[in-house]
Amino acid sequence: MITPILLAAGASTRMGRPKALLDFDGRTCLEVALDAVGGLDAPVVVLGPNRDEVRSRVPLDGVRVAVNDDVASGQLASLKAGLAFLPPGAEAFLFYPVDYPLVSRAEIARLIGASKAEPGKSIFVPSHQMRRGHPVLCRRPLAEEFSALSAGASARAVLDSRPGRIAYVLFDEAYILMDMDTPEDYARCLEAYHARERRKNP
Image (tube, rainbow, N blue to C red; front, side, top):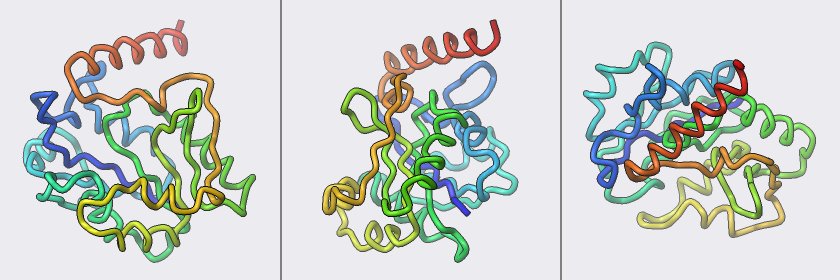
């Protein structure tokens, strides 16, 4: 059982509006992410100061909702909030920032396939041209290591502490690198999203 943890608590300061609610052909970015993890365990969605607005716009039935009001502490605080909702039966979790709108079920299936093919590895990182992307798939024991990090630390500290347990899953397309911090990023991702949809449905 793999539990997705969708991080959607950020203040979106540079974007100027909640990234989770950015529109992708009639669906919010959060809905796109929820679709990408369809078929896995019920997801945990971590919301922050914009949670009322997100709840009013996105159906969250069947979703576990965690709250991180301390968004100034960084992404790790949101991950810890989500890990607190990890169910006992979860064998792994997906560390998934919501602002990667080009991630689809295909990318996630590749990560899961890699985890089955390499049982000796604990962390499965998507990569493109030697750059790490998201989402990251981690086996259950890693939850304790993330939760034990001190405030202000980076989740990357867990990944970098023992590089030998990481499997890099290579992707030809840059979808797993394309996140959104600014309106320009959003426009770039939306263009790539449309291009991908056209290839899928010519």
